[in-house]
Image (tube, rainbow, N blue to C red; front, side):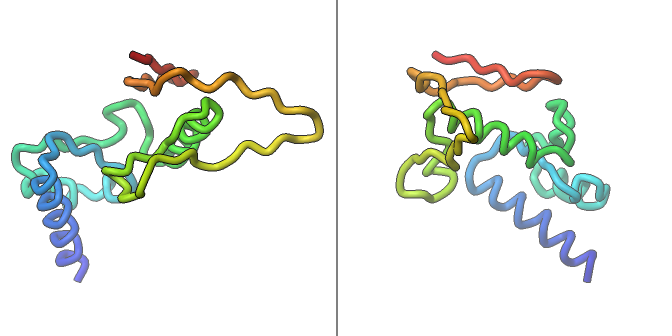
Length: 130
């Protein structure tokens, strides 16, 4: 049963990658530690570059922390963090909210435009706009 589910997972991901014209697939989570799944995925998704988040110096075990930090960054800058074409949402929206503590909360001015690039380093998240 496990072999069948592993093959089904690889087949499904590869089929959807092909359906959407994906050229690079960055995989994360526990499945990246399963050599059989990764080999099946690379075989089934021929023509698609398959790598893990580690290639981008982000440990798979830290993906939630990075995602929440990125969503927080977008929220504090007043930028929507949804992509309707990816999520199926009807429109873009801010995610989450900022709740002040006991003293007044001073937020930075909203960003003039969305970042076009994200650079993750070991100490800081940098963005470029334009």
